[in-house]
Image (cartoon, rainbow, N blue to C red; front, side, top):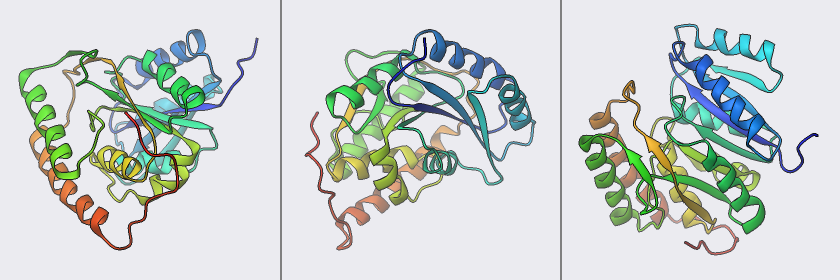
Length: 252
């Protein structure tokens, strides 16, 4: 029986992931078909791979009609997400990192919060009491320190800005995503901050999360770029041109 409800598009941003893309897409597709309650499809958003990642994804798309590929020449995870989301016609869009560190079951929980409970977007959190996380002490320290800075500098309420798992309603895609200036890793933080400050309701969802030992993210340099981004966003929030959207006040 065909599934009913809002169409959900799950974006997988990739950069030189030829070694894992087929396995990841296959696992995501199995979950969407066997466990996820809404109609859904996958979009591989490749941002500048040079190892054949997009070619492998296109072959998967030739096999499965619910797998598509969007290819950009320029790098940047934020750039890939912005392009994929703003060109999507899905009712709800989301993304997960290609390593699937975050449990896929969180997608249903957040989608239900948007569809049934009036939330506008949701983010996975590794820092809530109910979260189950496996990662090294260095990453844990940097993550907690950064998220503390977010709260101190911008007075936000969501707990984890950087978890690679986000779900957005169509309204957020149309009204907030175009405001986000960053095209890299800070994209997630800027998106959440701008949404919260304009009154959009954010579902802060505890998740099970397992660190990817193969991650090539340069933690220290990325964190420093993020800190600089925080002060840029603070200037934006204080600028005369920033206006709050007329939506319901954000709640925890």
